[in-house]
Image (cartoon, rainbow, N blue to C red):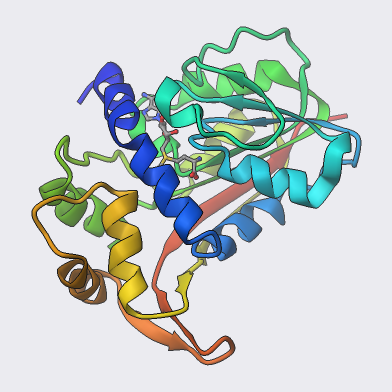
Length: 255
Ligand SMILES: C[S@@+](CC[C@H](N)C(=O)[O-])C[C@H]1O[C@@H](n2cnc3c(N)ncnc32)[C@H](O)[C@@H]1O
């Protein structure tokens, strides 16, 4: 699939993705917290979410830093970005060609978007241009060879109309890309961030809507997720969780 096909895909199923996120707002909380923890910005800051989708990371940034942070959402799929709720400057453009001046941001976060783009070096070069001295970048995405990648490229690929053909991230790649644009204090970890639900059956309902899975019941989706990723009780909350993990990396531009 080329770049434009994927933007069409997210225009097609972005509304369903956003509806799933609104129905189960706490499901991806650990995934969100892990990237927020790696974005140590000052309170008064300019932040860029790229690609933003429906603005999930931006909502977390607003919750953490309050109205003093100026948020810009970069989202190539116009329909997907049209649901962004948080107060933000929304720009519909690709994440490697952002029509903003150099030194625009103190923080940049990228959650679960890089695996749609094969050549990632130009994206990091563009982000490096946009960052101010001392700015922090944090990225998170699916690691190559992981159970999450297998689930997306096999199961989601089979049941979502446009398929799923992710170019997942090799261990060390994100660190190399951050170091390549001059970042210091680069750190990278594979982090378990299971998705959380009150009831076991919510897992299939959420994922069916999030990934726009057709010709399969929510019950069957739950069972497939148990096979691919594993479902367990969360003893602390009394709820249910499906396994999820992402590779998180962060770095800081020199002051
Ligand atoms: C799984 S969504 C993640 C959205 C959001 N960051 C989140 O965590 O909910 C994947 C994102 O990648 C974007 N994307 C897909 N193909 C792209 C491309 N070729 N260039 C830039 N962004 C792309 C989509 O528009 C979408 O925003």
